[in-house]
Image (cartoon, rainbow, N blue to C red):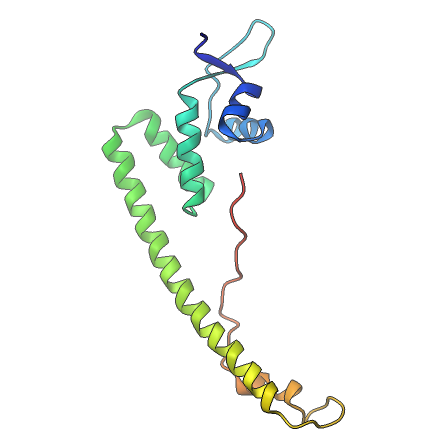
Length: 155
């Protein structure tokens, strides 16, 4: 059994599209072990573990810039270094998430308040300066400081 995988085999076994693997190679997350005589990329089976690590780090919300640093440490440093750096990054991410949760809870309260205002508003005919629709914002806290919701990371 070969210890090397073609990009199509690595893609099939890792779940990452070949285009993503080529991108990861360009940005330094993945280095092909070798090239075949025909010029095909050959990846080491150990790259599957690295890709699992990258996928897990992405699922924890880490940006590729941080993951690139972690993978560089993975390649050159002892596991304790990677573990320590990963722990620090996850602590920071936890603080960001806690802040975001507080913001979203406040935003949810604002949405509830807006719904109550609209439910109890008198029918004023057409919308204008005296209707609940136009004065709604005046009765709510400023939520413009909220960060936009970020999409779920994709592979």
